[in-house]
Length: 245
Ligand code: NAI
Image 1 (cartoon, rainbow, N blue to C red):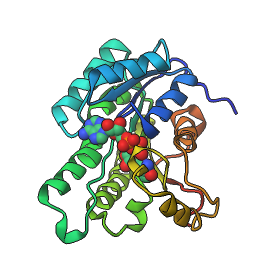
Image 2 (image 1 turned 180 degrees about the vertical axis):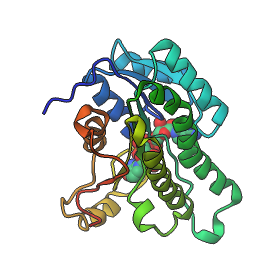
Image 3 (image 1 turned 120 degrees about the vertical axis):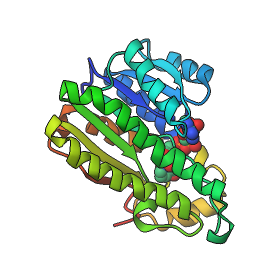
């Protein structure tokens, strides 16, 4: 099964490191022209240069809807209309419920949920005109099962699932597919603070007995970005080594 994305333009938010970078690398490897985005323009351009001659770097803070709109316009001008949108940028501000400040709530919801909404709103116009599009939102198993100390993060990721299903229904007639990938625990900067002991305890609860890697996520995203997924929309795909069944 060869995934061929040649001729496609892909925009991956938060793609200078971690899962986003692995996704961008995989899409570029399949032939897509990829827009690498991060809050630091120079870093985004550097990563784009490392990835592929056809990749370009752009600055964008997804929690600023104006910045997201400007990003989509800039990508369209430099690479062409966006065919594949991967909403990957995300952050955590973990705390027990009564210690979550309004700012912690807003920061997480603004980046993880409103940022995705703004990117979908901006990129789907062109997809509608061309009657082809793939929207892939990176949520989390926590958005399905909840988690102590992550009420804001879990709410943002659960919101992404509702957003995706609504978008899938609204845009299906234009051949635009929207799906969610919900990772379990993946080894990135986001989980770097976990001790080895905590990782071992966690692995013991995972049937595949290890944490995931960014590549474990990227393969599914590449499949969902391609023509191979033509009859799949509004779905949530959990990639967690079997932790949540
Ligand atoms: P990471 O922290 O390494 O990468 C997150 C990326 O998003 C970074 O490049 C960061 O700069 C960017 N970002 C954060 N806020 C941003 C903003 N306001 N504007 C633009 N970019 C912003 O984390 P990781 O693990 O690669 O996370 C990627 C996605 O996967 C996130 O949405 C995360 O919630 C999700 N996820 C990660 C899991 C894990 O175990 N690592 C598990 C489940 C979901």
